[in-house]
Length: 285
Image (cartoon, rainbow, N blue to C red):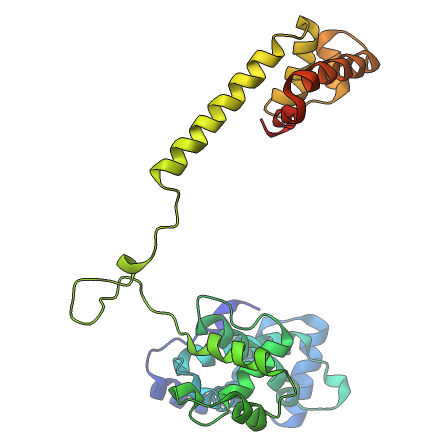
């Protein structure tokens, strides 16, 4: 079933309502016949008829979510997607009407859209949080910014969650997104101008660079105490872009894997005597 079936094709809400109200409803017998035929043959024409005949019910369900300050046509479009999903999964042999089954999918798609659109930061990531979100949405005045204390909210939504969890979630919901480029009062100063720069300062960057230079110098000097073959083994094992296995190094040098292991072991012992605890710098290189 193509996604285009769910798209609202007009910007006029009134025109859309008038259009779908002209589509005749299906009798139980007609719906069952279409659903059975679609279940067996998956003909898009049958699915389209089932969807369009129930579009007015999506509008009714979407109207229940007007309080979330979302565009009504957006809510309807998401609900239509849920209706399409329901048609795909509907089993007419169970004996109930399509809309009785579809209402769950319609609500699920609308609620998922509201959760996604409410904030750039996810406000509901668990089933418990999503449930709390929509319970709070039914509390009169909440979405209009009225203040309610934690005890009042818990009583109104019949929540058994601890105070900290409810308080934290309410704060997340009330913290709506706003642009950092927005000016503060009438000045040219923006919220972005007031953000602290948490990047390293010049002194920290200089210290980090000097530390790195000293580390590399210590390693270079320590490597000079190894034999040429030991240097090749250490270079392959610790300084290659992608660390090589004992077998890879052995194949390159024409020696056995066991011989590479012995050379590496001897080399690390020498480096440990020279670098002491700083031998761990090899791994960090």
